[in-house]
Length: 432
Image (cartoon, rainbow, N blue to C red; front, side, top):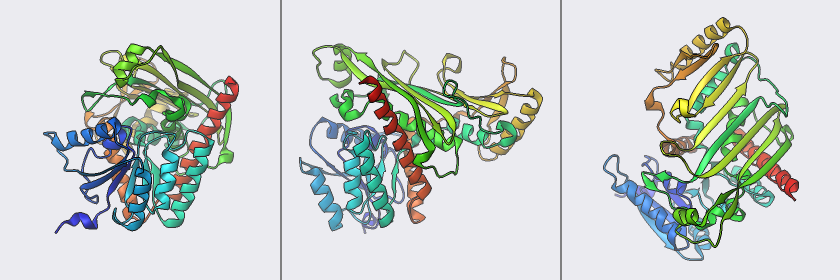
């Protein structure tokens, strides 16, 4: 007997980004091995299927996905009809990762068809998309469906440790409010258009360089950074739009040469492209001044990759994540005393003792900077960005088994996109 008929299925709708395939980088006990894909034909679909097949064919931990593919320009209508008729099984999970200007429409269509949704960031890149996402979230709640985005960075061990340390009042103290000129919470990252995925050079679709489709930088990777701010600074708190006040925002371009464009996409460009991929904004969240910034360059220097920086300032200590040359370009957490060093050291020791109960081997080490400690983390916890997708899906499935989503999570997700869209509009007004 084929037990797949009793399991939920993954359904990819128009997968145009490799994150859709990374969701299938492992098998899940509660998910059928047969997965559906609805998409127009073309290179993006071929790339998606090719990456899933690489997961099936690898020597260590091979997967066993069977892809059931519908190709055609009417893919969205065909998907909706199949979902509503029950052809896709009970409450399938729709995975969205591709053209960002269409995600809100796909998410709303999926919920209307009775499907759960797990979407790559960003779900919305403009006001119209945000309103559709809000409608989809309300409808999903009414139908008892799970509607979430793929926040992989919550599974990065350094992000987890910063959140845990910030919750320790003896160590961190009270959250400092900061100022617009000197925010108390800062998160920034540097990304690259040309990179390796599963050991193979990533081929970007040509639309990736079109911010009308991809969205300008202020609405893309900033999704992760804003999410980490909300999750780390206000754990367990349900936020609202009234908690958000945009102070300043800006975007600026990365120049991509025709040769670089051809290397990345396989296509041709008549001249240099100015891609509005970079962005930053400062906002007050519940009275705390925060800043996020994202920069894109074409390719990382040898031995490096995407980098992340984080600062959180409490009344008793600062928490930093650095990922520079000194850290061999791997994220490392640092704790800096803001008061008495001996008291901070004692509080840090108690905090690490508690944390190591769940994360054995985590330790605080002295540095050559007075009053600064480095948090040592066993290599086994640094599993890498691609593996975080499987962790997100596993958590998502646990919530499905528990009977549905977390209303606070969805509310905070909407507040996150509200802040990003507000910042994007402010940047557009500034540049007009």
